[in-house]
Image (tube, rainbow, N blue to C red; front, top):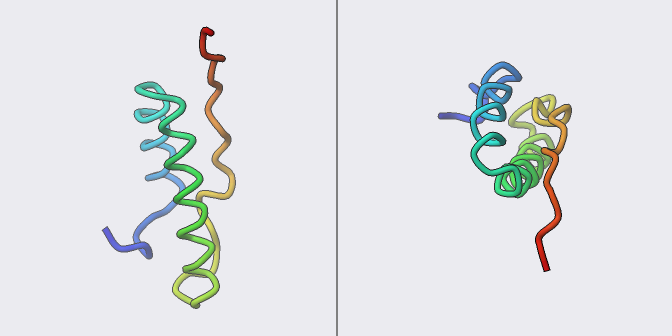
Length: 64
């Protein structure tokens, strides 16, 4: 999938599935996605970051 084809509706569907599987992994992937869109904006490939409004998934602390 090209970065130009990614929109909010695709990201919401991805979030719903991914965050339910593993909230921690979703948060890591979300951070990478935010960075990728930041670079794409700097290079003029896109004009906005559709991942900007995705909230972090709630995680629970690890048992120690």
